Image 1 (cartoon, one colour):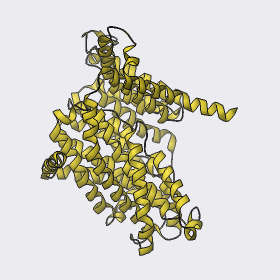
Image 2: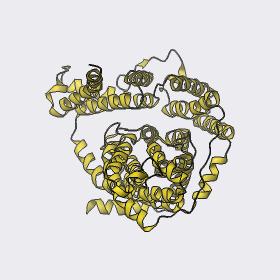
Image 3: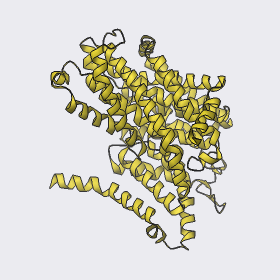
Image 4: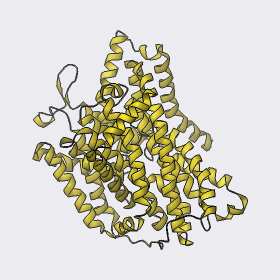
Length: 496
């Protein structure tokens, strides 16, 4: 009952005209970003982070979460019509969705995608409402050893899963951790690793690094390496489903939601694994008379299930972010930066110290989910027109927004030079397949992990055995070792 009352108070805040406006703007912009191939919610949120200096926390966080969820909806459009996924989570949608569009059923594929996203998103938001406060209550009982090992688990999983190579991921993580050490020591007040540069006294601004690594690097990389590309778009038919397609879609929606949400809540679960898992499940469970459609004319179950899993997983990533302060995806790592810009530390304390903000954010998810359904189905032809925007203009706009935003934070020319230097570093990382998300995770969580490590050692009177004497921290250390060792052991078994 208490949860219901808190949710209602959240609706009262989220339904104010200004917050509704932010939710609408976020959903519309997110859908547009999802439609445009190559851009993603992480780039967009990173580029818009400087607005946190001007906009109050509730409005901007509702805006950012709207972008995140909107991109999940919009990403399916290009997968189905162009065979070009706008987001990694919609890669599987292209397998059957594009074939459905080629056989003249683009409208049905888009309809099951949008409605499935709504159904799965709603289920995931209800689960978030029920479980996130419980996880936060449990996390209050954790001490510094457990927090440090939890962050260690986040470091390892994000670094080893988000990228093609664990070594490259860990290298990127250590780069972020090193950047996080620059500035004043939080505990002793000693200045370290500044190289005598006064601008580094307060540390390296996370927003600046996020904008440089995501937005600036994305624009420069596309200008340098992508070149001109042309693609053929399938004809858009009327967006609706017949009775048979409804009957085939709804079980796939429910199964997809059931698979997506748990994967979203675990570190580095991501949206890719549940979407592929959902696709494999639907292919196995499809009725014999429709089995031949998979891989030939396109099966609607192959679109409905993965799209539902994708949206449920995206919502699920908010559980560890809000309840534990642990980002489990690239976009939630950037969202964590937004929260810290307001002096808010996501985690169990957030539900106590910023209760009104958290519940307004959760309530806005319900509102945004309805907005996205209304924006996607009737306005699909409008979103498709965005594909006509020339890429040079698009990336030039990103550079202008990034430059103005970062300069507006402190009116410092030094920040602009640093942003473009970080942008070039991001280009090199993309060129050589180094993931950029671990840099942000290391930069944000590094100082927090350092503080928790020092506190844990103080509790243990300088003895490192404090991490193995407590059951939960020992269990987390074992999981960290399994994450590092298991893939190599399996690879060795395959070669043997």
